[in-house]
Length: 237
Image (cartoon, rainbow, N blue to C red; front, side, top):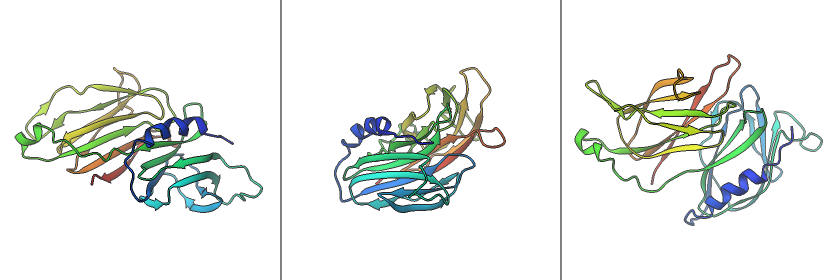
């Protein structure tokens, strides 16, 4: 499959240009295509070889500039084989801190979706004072090959109390729900196919960590027909 993603990335780059400038670009790559090991090339050179599904890379620094990104099934010959996914002429500006996710859309098309990571200071959650806890950040990024889902994040739960019915956030493929500041207590996260349906994922406990952004990537279905979640932890400077 050959998929040129100029439209998807062009929209994202409008947001990227608002990121403050610094010395380099920092990029992480997430492999959320079930069952396919790939090789990732940047400007004709191998960037990630034998890149297995369900892998979240550490952040790497790259020079700012223009990049051609191509994803091949592992072992393919770039000189004769067509890439499974192709992104040409991506402008990565100074100061960019982003995660790029390879994943299928609901119609099975393979795409690369970039997410800009919010590294702005975390404003303390007022509830943190009551519980003597700090605050962290949570993001849920829809990268599963299913249609609209509804994310629920429980307000918080301790051994003594559970507070509130969690609100729902509607997400389609490639969208993000961002919770900029949450008190650092366990949150119970669910992903539902419809507002009143049984969860496809969860409710599962997610520990909110002071000074960190926890990012959840629902993906799949996998070979067993289940949706799963990849987790990324990002430090807020």
